[in-house]
Length: 369
Image (cartoon, rainbow, N blue to C red; front, side, top):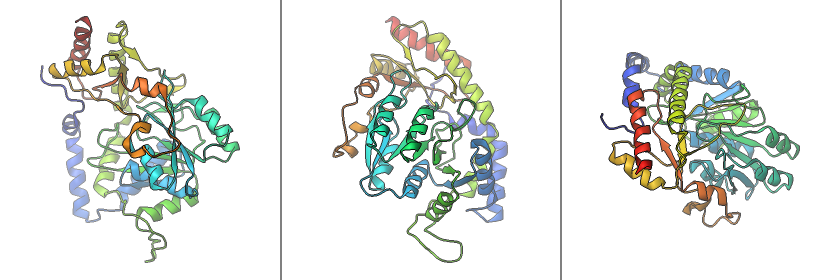
């Protein structure tokens, strides 16, 4: 059997090629490559999918977070809570907005932000905003947190970069956030052939402000009324994302089947531990992550077998050099421990049953040795 990469975008392209190539030709032949009908169609589809009133597409998930936080207009030095287990963008945008990240430890069973920790900070009014990260494709519970935050007027931004298609109690959002931020990074369940993102909100004023930020503060009448950015999504990317959205349910179902296969084959191995899917959550399995105490040895062994794995994420955010001068940093024992043991296995709809079996058999062989 050939090598098993961590992701196979080439296989996905072969499936989509009959739709992708005509779409590219159609966009280029029309000549409107920015802010056209495909972008409007994508924004409308995302509103329907995520049950929000307004959607603004941007150039990346990072821009989505950055513009959302900027729209809150928090005073300089405001404290923004965020899980220490996430991609760097979840916290770097806090610095970009002259705010201070307050890193939160994780629940050992889910790797999601510890609910009790965040509730304590809310009740003490020790924070001014929250970035709630839906990690690995599972949604962060926001019922208790959202209700408590609302009483203190603490806004919530959902970092849903990894959770498109996931639900909690059959809903894509529990309704307590000001913004839901999406990433269309190529590695995501629905990914662009490049970069892309989107911001969803029910607040018309926020939506209008983000539209200004998206293109240099231009108000549509030839005036530039605030210092904005150039964060427009290309029409080609919007067109290709519209195609891919039609496959969301099918691809999510295939990811779930792969995850179940992994679960069934690995569940009897004492040295492999799993993260829990919370009651009420439907996981999209953007990542399939397990724990092993000799994680590095397992990665090396699998690589020698031709199986490529990843670590998401090897260094918790509060230990990243970028944040070494943050006064609110503190020791977060659970995330520091678990991050040394996590390993992400290959998971994508095009992964074959023989390939899945090779991964699980190789893990068993490593453990047997």
